[in-house]
Amino acid sequence: MSKHPTQVEGFNGSLEELASSIGNMTYEKVAEFTEKYAQDIQKQAYDDLLRGNIQLAEQLYLISDDLYEASKNLKKAWRICKPYMTDD
Image 1 (spheres, rainbow, N blue to C red):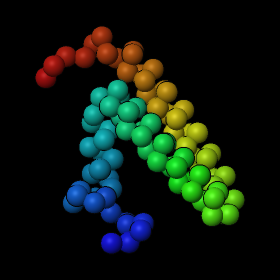
Image 2 (image 1 turned 120 degrees about the horizontal axis):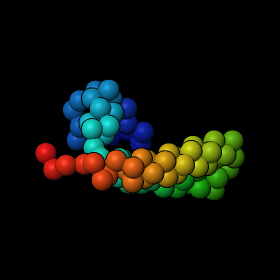
Image 3 (image 1 turned 180 degrees about the horizontal axis):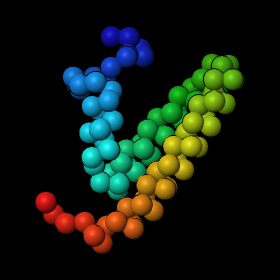
Image 4 (image 1 turned 60 degrees about the horizontal axis):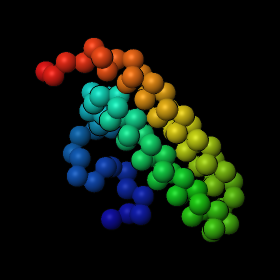
């Protein structure tokens, strides 16, 4: 398998279907996913920095910062809608 695959291992749907599946989760879980993704991107940035890929590392750090911010905003959205959630 490629170091950077073009599909999510174990998921046979399209990227659109994956985005929809993630979007259907509660904001709390999407925030958790987004934070874990930010951590992964941040680790990639660090690894690239160690390899001397400075420009790539800088961009990846910016992306991870944006993902952390998105996670923070998703948590705020969750706090707003949580009282209205019902068990379906």
